[in-house]
Amino acid sequence: MFIMDKHKPAWFQNGVLYQIYPRSFYDANGDGVGDLAGITAKLDYLRGSQHSLCVDGIWISPFYPSPMADFGYDVANYCDVDPLFGTLADFDELLAGAHKRGLKVMIDFVPNHSSSQHPWFLESKADKTNPRRDWYIWKDAKDGGSLPNNWQSWFGGPAWRLDETTGQYYLHTFLAEQPDLNWANPEVRATMREQLRFWLDRGVDGVRVDAVWWLSKDPDFRDDPDDNTFTNSRGGPKLYHYLNELVAVVKAYPGRFMVTEGYPIERGTPRPYLPFYRRLNPEITAPFNFEAIHLPWKARAYQKFINQYQAATRANDIPIYVLGNHDKPRLASRIGQPAARTAAMLLLTLPGMPFIYNGDELGMENVVVPPERQQDTVERHGADAPGSRDGERTPMQWSGAPNAGFTTGQPWLPLEDNWKERNVAVEANDPASLLELYRSLIKLRHEQPALRDGDYRPIASGHPDVMAFERRSSHQRLMIFLNFEPEPAECKLSTPIGQLLLSTTGTERQTDIKMLALQPHEGIIIEAQA
Ligand code: GLC
Image 1 (cartoon, helix red, strand yellow):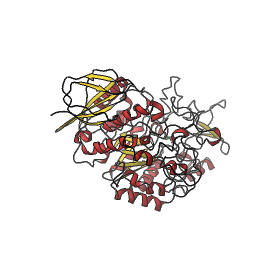
Image 2: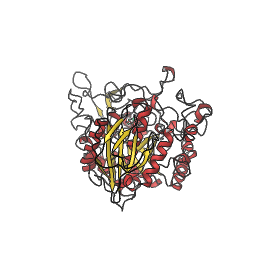
Image 3: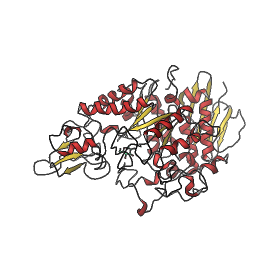
Image 4: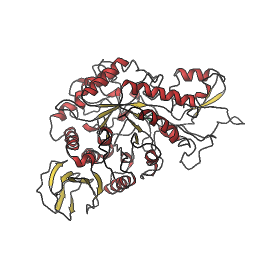
């Protein structure tokens, strides 16, 4: 159930957000890596001109000063911009340009760990009595010399690294270059709140908060059990308390919003997501819902999960569905190009605040990066996406110009082979392209009241491969039918269908029919007769 509160700003209730991976969006200075000035240069693509995608906001992955061991998720200064990406003045220009177009800007906040080069960590590791010693998590080896406990790094190997200077181990949930901050220390939390205020004061509209499960750990640092539930290393007893402290900061700035990133261990159920609504303030924050990335591409699986999610959330909860990001194999590679069109219609007709990962609107595919050009070397990131994440982070394909118009230099990662056919310039001129479908869907979402704030109600499609649901507002009823498979599908309906608003295959239809014949992978939006 989702009912829009008319008194709240609409952007985070039903706005379409667009994730920008800044290294790969657009390179304005020719060094082969995207930058903030590059994002500013491409704002018209996103909003404010006649041919814009017309998204409501952007989330920019980290651009802080960083040694880039994890491409910016290892932050060496929370209140500045890495020279690779530009300056604070460039950020202000980007923000002003976005706001002029009515585009909201969310930044990435990485509270669980800093870079091992952050001055805080350098001080912390200097000696055991340093005032910042307790800002990170230091432990002795167990009697007999073994590691403090059995916790594993999410990127492979033990989560503990011995520091020779003091003979103690520090905890790193991700790379050894990303030591975990000690959130049990109130001084750390107060300082992190200040870092957040720095950006809110600067005018950002929201934050995406990274890796939240690890903010709180078992206070006794007990071993994780052998059942892959990781119940001691993550999701500790203070998690929502700490997050509420961040929510309180955001709440002090009206109209701002916070999205949390946490992949549940238990998949295919709304259960692990619900505390992020119930135990926090759902008017200020909501969790990313990652199930649409992980579910098998089957109508029944999606219908079941989404029905459950919509039923489990309450009127003010904002669902945040997402089909891809910089950590997961590309959508079009996971499910294929034809299904990527159906998925686009699904994403943009569901309630809440959908996020599009840059390039997914073009159908960009995972690139196989040769070993000599590999950048990301993590060993593991979730059981279904082992190995390097380079493949989903390749440069945005803008045009048929050299390097797809991304850079005049040498791009930091290779381009997809068929960038000459799959790029913004080509797709913008082809009414049948995926980009044009995204544009039409976003336009429709803005125009149709039921897509913006209507209830979600499942419909029995009468065909196992067709997911169907209604979006219903006080004056409008829209029906969405999505054929997940490469075979045609016929749905018998109890009522005549009404007027076709959009088909992913462009197939025309008569109104008032009771037998709905869908093309392979076709998705349609129909306005039902009143
Ligand atoms: C999140 C980010 C990922 C990063 C990790 C550690 O999952 O999305 O890219 O490596 O956190 O910060």
